Length: 87
Image (cartoon, rainbow, N blue to C red; front, side):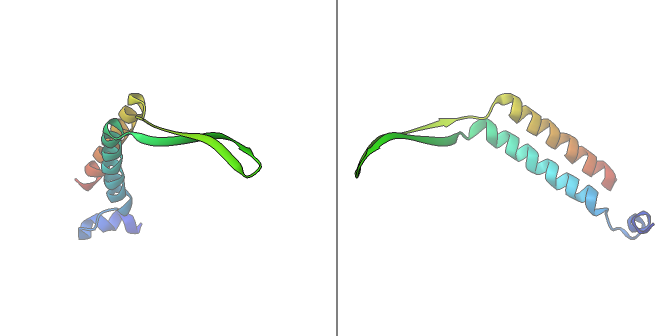
């Protein structure tokens, strides 16, 4: 196949190169999700005719540490898999 001949010419398999980049992206997103809160807002109110009475509340929540750990672990696994294919 053509992909078997590519390493002989110094060309890496594009899939493995992409695995490395996707893995690094997942690690960065996992670390960012531990630190950066996600803002959300709610608006509750009543509309009577042309009059609007309401309250808007805004709060920030962080992503679960379990989700962050899964992102980081998955990113590390993909980065290692992509890096080992280069060797």
